[in-house]
Amino acid sequence: MPKPRAHRSPAALPSPASSAALVDIGFIPVRAKLIEVAAYLARVERLGAAGDVRCAALRAAARVLVDGKPARARRILERLSDPTTRPDTVSTGKAALGAWQKSARGKK
Amino acid sequence: MRYIEPHGHMVSRTTDDYQAMVTAGCQAVCEPAFWAGFDRSSADGFRDYFRQLTEHEPARAAKFLLPHFSWLCINPKEAEDLALAADVLAMIPEFLAKPNVLGIGEIGLNRNTRNELKVLEQHVDLAVKHDQLILVHTPHLEDKLKGTRLIVDLLRAPARVKPGRVIIDHVEEHTVQLVLDRGFWAGITLYPDSKSSPPRAVDMLETSGHDRIWLNSACDWGVSDPLAVPKTAFEMRRRGHSAEFVDQVLFQNPVRFLSQCPKFRLGV
Image 1 (cartoon, rainbow over the protein chains, first blue to last red):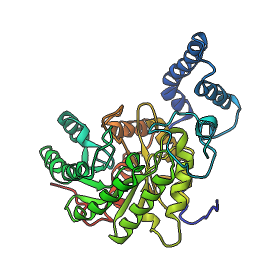
Image 2: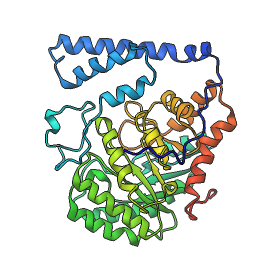
Image 3: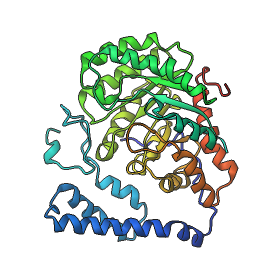
Image 4: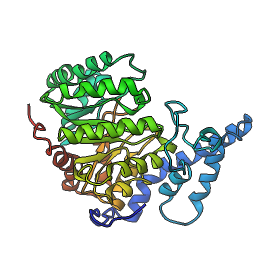
């Protein structure tokens, strides 16, 4: 896909808050969410559902959290996305699953 | 604080929500045509819905001193039925002259099918023919990246639309730059469980730009929060952003885009 440079957005605008303040603002809520992720993965494993494609996708995406590279949210979203490029012939239903699997959308 | 709710499905909300939004500083609400949660059985169902969006809901909002605007289309969730879509598309021009109609939307894709793409193209042609603004819905979850690429490619067909008159909504970290770099406006939707949270939205403003972006709650009949936009203002302020910056993103930006339609006016 071509990448035209026109219409580029203005320069990024970093948060004026101090780095310590940013950690304070986000730490407790994010700590809670991380524990939720851990508990969820343990729960589905305990119940024998760890092989579900969505659970497998979560485990794979979680590796991005600690790889030390930037843009983690973008890269996790990309990992969970349909990588194909052609429109589907028919719909498989109104609702998306949240994680792409080749077998469910094999008509591409 | 003042803000615009540029994307709210108010027919699904209560009068308590209207009161809370106005109390929080909402100056106007814009309502794109949406899926009802079930498929309508005929074009007549859409005629009733369009009357609701252009007659009943503006009157309900006016009781709370809130200007109400709408966008019309057959939502991509119902676009698999090409015959139904053709009937609805033929009906839309009847409603375009209504005083609160801003344009065509929220059109787009749901599961990225060929039929959805055909109906999207027909909507875009209709908007161009009638010189309407366009509001685009991008797909959910794993379908969003592919769907956004398909939508952008369709819209960028030579001389099809002016990008500055199109807002592509529900962007996330993996699609926001794709939209902005091609000259379109981008909408960030604030949802409790999907799309973006207030902290992630502010991250995108800080890293991807803030000149052609609006924030919306897309509140509807599902899990959603009609006060998500003012709550994001709080997130912006506690990160140290100025009141002027908040006003630019939450009020001035949507006013700038929506004012391209001369029917968009504030104040009842």
